[in-house]
Length: 334
Image (cartoon, rainbow, N blue to C red; front, top):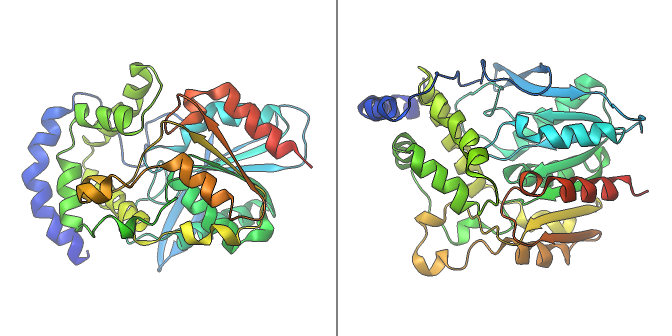
């Protein structure tokens, strides 16, 4: 085990009792082993730094007249790929073969210790496509997945026909406003997270226009993970993704993306990872996501922005029908 794991074990042990006390649901394995996905899950075998890992994905055949294209979906940091269920169904009905994957460190995929990198995640996804015999995709990505999609499109431009970025984070360089945060502080924060606190983070921090019951379903996943005997390993994986987001900006790369790109933004989405760690004057400058998307799109060769009024950070859940219509219209263009 690395020094990080040794250093964190004592802290995790001290905080184990509060974790157990606040959760009252059935335990959930950190690879979501007993959590149902809407479609069958398969795995691609990968080797990262000499360690064998498995990346999960759903591979859904067209249910409508096949159009010969593949849609690849990248999830956000706080979500498993199962939340794409209605998007998968809609795109499959439109004739797409749909691949929705859990990145390494998320969902049903392996949870190795960090550090993580967008470059490695892009390579992982490229290798998955290679193993599936897929040369080119239409890429739809949400939140953290948007940062990964930007890096993927830059690294493998020939593999991305069209790019849809739904409420991507990383439309600013967080290093300019948020100071570095230690892993120990992040571990303590995650271990002290309460059900009510996480609910508020999703509903208020993401400005979600969703019923409380829909938000609670997302909260329940995390609450059940906290009961796992491997929860400490999940936390180490989760905080590694925070450090990746903070330390590996992609905002400066957008002008170099030639792929036709559609940003779909919620007007109320002011999510800004790390803002609680920033000084008040710096925090006030963060999270103007729709405005940032418009400014960035203007620097790109072929990009446009659609903004949904009254919508927060997850348009595909908050406005499923308009979202799917806009995505299909954009992807179906010649």
